[in-house]
Image (cartoon, rainbow, N blue to C red; front, side, top):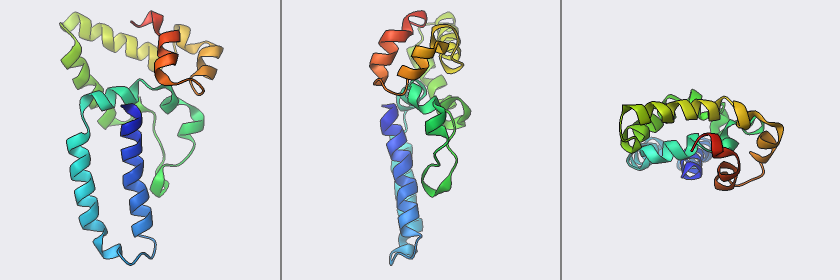
Length: 144
């Protein structure tokens, strides 16, 4: 789900780059962007934001140092307001009570800040080579 979020975000930027670079459809860009963003807003659900926030790859410096389409600087999920609002809404939906919601937020902080097992060298290396579900099943024991 997090990768769907990333691909959609990049697709909008790539279409912008193509249409605004001496393309015969440059005059159609504003309407096309309106349509794409409208669809994006319908698709951008809380669980997509949570999936994006839980993918270690999107915190990696190699990923963050490569510009997104249109030359936009990438940000880690915890530094993107839209993502933060989305995963907090997801926690509100999946947390059974305020104590569980608070625990989810604490565990996410450990994950995002690479604390405890998440900060180990092998966990950092594997974050860029393993698929997210395998990585989380290997290193997520402290944040069930």
